[in-house]
Length: 158
Image 1 (cartoon, one colour):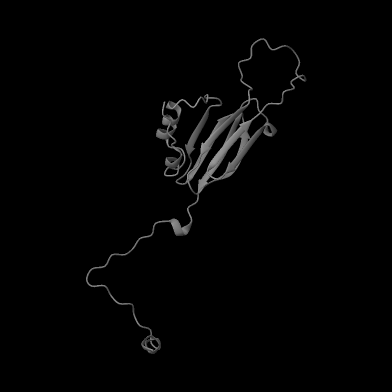
Image 2 (image 1 turned 180 degrees about the horizontal axis):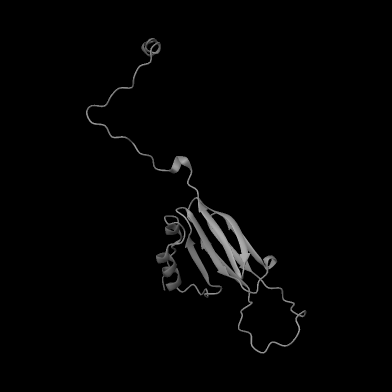
């Protein structure tokens, strides 16, 4: 079976294009849907990734941004002997996880916060001034030569 690497296409998006995510899932990479997450646009160039990490404490979660990749890892401490009683049914997953998000160029992680069982990672897209498009005025008629400043015409002739 053929596999397609869609990584180059992520750079042309803001980093979270639904079409490429669906194609990645259809390719059968074997990743589960755990933990669930939301991606929200909070402004014109601002985004928020919210990951459901109920049962994990702040020191059991790591958020790493490297190059164009955001990696969120969670690993529970193996020792739960401090709890009282016996668990009759375990419906809340506490297994280790790793979620990776591909970020577009110029997208940077600003903050990460944990509240009410949700990890919120705020992202912002900051395009350098040199990379931003600029408007060029269009004039009619023949092109106008650059004005000559007095005292510089002698230097130009020499």
